Image 1 (cartoon, rainbow over the protein chains, first blue to last red):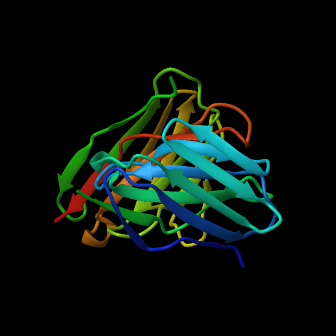
Image 2 (image 1 turned 60 degrees about the horizontal axis):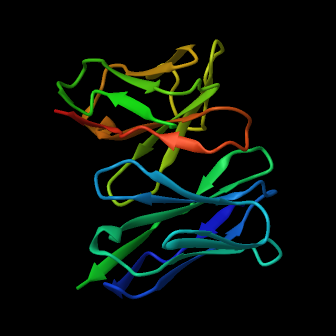
Image 3 (image 1 turned 90 degrees about the vertical axis):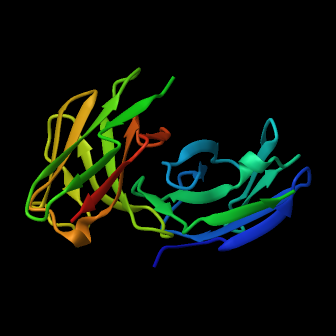
Length: 109
Length: 116
């Protein structure tokens, strides 16, 4: 079957760095997405990786290793507004998005 | 760019009534739109995929006669929940994709449905 694993919840301190991991087993691979979802709101797009390596976009970076079926989202200089759920989604061979359950990130002052 | 709107943002209705939710891509033409449902503290669940001008493709377990989807134009898709019941209360979110299958999906703000 197809599976996306990410931690249920993580806690970090304002100003610090946090890494949210995502591992996947899917039938084929056509890219991996990270979305941010604040409570009660719809997801917003953060990043897309289809090749191995690190993609940096401001305070957020996303890494992909296709051979390991692994990605992480790195958030630097954490701000209170970064408190949200972070969803990992993989596009499979049928171009369907397979969603992880999301990681709830709690930022403490 | 890539703005998707949804209307209404929140709706409360009586059991047995029908509710229509609109999803619009405001600054691009959406060849494909997706409808998701999300229950509290759970992940997104894809309900159906719709391409402009053709019938929607429903995911397993989603009743097509209960959740009517119309994708009449490249900027508008509607989801009608027919004969809604309390168990249909959920957060309904649409997303739209501009071009090919590898294009990013952009989400609307969601519609919170409460059926009494």
